[in-house]
Every structure is written in C-alpha cells, then in structure tokens.
Image 1 (cartoon, one colour):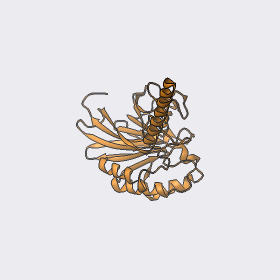
Image 2 (cartoon, rainbow, N blue to C red; image 1 turned 90 degrees about the vertical axis):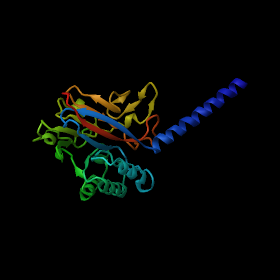
Image 3 (cartoon, one colour; image 1 turned 60 degrees about the vertical axis):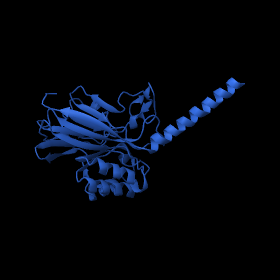
Image 4 (spheres, one colour; image 1 turned 45 degrees about the horizontal axis):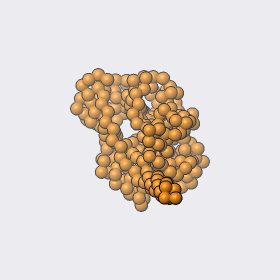
Amino acid sequence: MKIRLGFLALMILLGAASIGKAIYDTNVFKVNHVNLESSELPAGEELEVLQITDLHNKVFGDDNEKLIRTAEELNPDLIVITGDLVDHSTKQFQQVFDLSEKLKAIQKDVYYVSGNHEWENEKTEELFQGLRERNVTMLDNTHVTYQREDTKIHIAGVADSSTDHENIKQAFAGIDNNAYTIFLSHSPNIVTKYDDIPADLILSGHTHGGQVRFPFIGAVVAPDQGLFPDLTKGVYQVDAGSTLYIDSGLGTSIAPVRFWNQSQMTLLTLSGSNEAD
C-alpha cells in the first residue's frame, strides 16, 4: 500500500512539475545568443542582429512591454522579423502594429518577410499595408543593402516558401556576391527546395523548435517535416556553404503550449575574421 501511495505521489509531483514547466516555457521568453564569424566581414568588425520570429500575435507583458524593453536593452544594429507575426485566425492587427512602431523607435532598420500564417489569414493585404505604413521594410522577394561605416552587407528575403509565394531569383537579382549576404526565409526548408542559395547566413523560423520537445529525443514534430524532424532549431551548415540558423520563436500554433522549448528571440553577433571560411 505504501509503495502504491508513494508511486502515486511521485506521478502527481511529476505531472505538476511538467505543467509548471510548460507554463513557464510558453509564457516567459529568453534571449538566445549566437556568435558567428566570417571573412566576408571586415576583420574586427561586429554586427548585432536581433531576430524575432513566430510571435503568432502573442503578447508578453502589458502591450508587449517586456518584449520591447528587452529589445531596447539589447540595442541591436538591426532587427529582422522572419514571419508569422500573426496567426491565420487573427482578426485585429493593432497589437502587431503597435509592436512594429515601438521596434522602429528602438532601431530604424527593421526588416520583415512573411510566413505561412500571414498568407493563410483572410486579411493578408491589410496586415502588409499596415506594416508598410509604419515603415517596416518588407523583403518579400527582394533585397536591400545595409551600410555602416566600412561594413556593407546585403539583406535579401523571400515571401513564405511553404505556401509557394517565394521568388528566389527575384530576391537575389543584382546582388554583389563579394559582400556578406543575409537571407531571410520563414521556412528553413528553403535549403532543401533550392540548391546553392547565394547567401552567407540564412535566418529562418517556422518550426517553433518542434514546439514540444523531450530530453534526449528533441522535437517530436515540425511543420513540413513530420515526425522527428531534422531541421528544428539552432545552427546548421548547408552543403552550399551557407550557415542556416533556425530560431524556435516566441509564440505557438495549433496547441497553445511549449514544453522543454522555451519561447525566445535571438541576438546574433556577426564578427569579421581574417581567416577564409
């Protein structure tokens, strides 16, 4: 009898701990720090890029105050948003518009590419127009050149490839291959869909890191990849020579829960190196 009661108590304790862990991972975000080097950047030069992805209209603190305060404290050189700012069922965009205005107040260089949930939303164009009116630079199938003193980089992007809205040829048209190039693609599967993407760094989201993960197993499922996916979160080396970084994001979809996969945004520090890659 005592053994049974002890086992029951242990199960209750583990269940409560699991629930607490899920609540924490879903509602308290962290900043993931990633350091990358490249000889394509001037030696000794550093560029800090804040990546925000897969918010899905979630709010952290009153009016996203926690999110904004953290971005302000990080003070990045530029901010990139890699899709799914909203959910496919989102009806009102004011939270996202307020967030974009506050991000622009922190850093004038804010770049965005669309995700599948934007394209699945019935008010897609209303969202896009609202972001344009707030001077967020939309990089769906296009690119810009970012210049800071002696540092010059290209930032290219595609509209969501998982819904077949991308035009990768158009995105890279006219880019100088001698400059460091960052490529924004909501879905990381862009690297399996296209060979030889002419970018040094590819930044993606979409997977939510699997959203639910388990120790020693990793992600159980991810969109477009099915069970036990290969591309979920973190840094990957692509055969073409590019570096792929997948941010597991801030929000949730389908089930409103994360487990062993805390909400996050990422600060990437890109450093110039004397050595060839």
